View 1: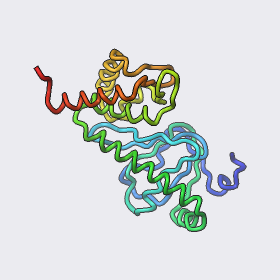
View 2: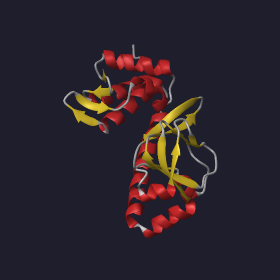
View 3: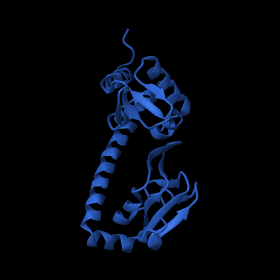
View 4: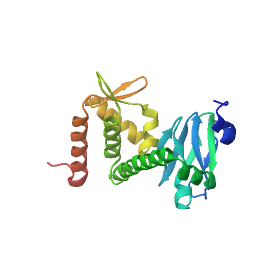
Length: 215
């Protein structure tokens, strides 16, 4: 990859743990992941919520260039990374001269808008269990179909950061889902046998949160 002309021109290497930018800081550069993974996080109250983990071919930091506003989240290298670092002037020139890049950017921004709407919907849920179930249902719908059900590439220890709840709250919700056989734990992720049943359980939790237990 080091022989790639783009990497020769714009490439930089960052060790694991490097903070590329902080939430609230000004920004005049965007990044393209050439190798490695970058985690995007945002503080929600007292919890650091993981918004996404980006791999090779993904880009980040473009919004600070497009709207000239402070960074909306924090980006940290989850492992040793090779990234393209592109400043605002170069980014604008690339968009103007290459329609394919512009279309790809538009599609990616549309996907992120949909994800943001889902995250807002999740944050509006008042109880931790509902937020856990909502996140898993959405992730399952986007997951990989297997004979056992929809597979989610997420290990249980990462769930609190993804949902923005305390570890004990996530563990309690997962135990209930496992007991009800609404999810199963596999070595490399979670499997939802029936997404519709998980959605029905979410509706039950929301009604319970709104109206309480009915005698």
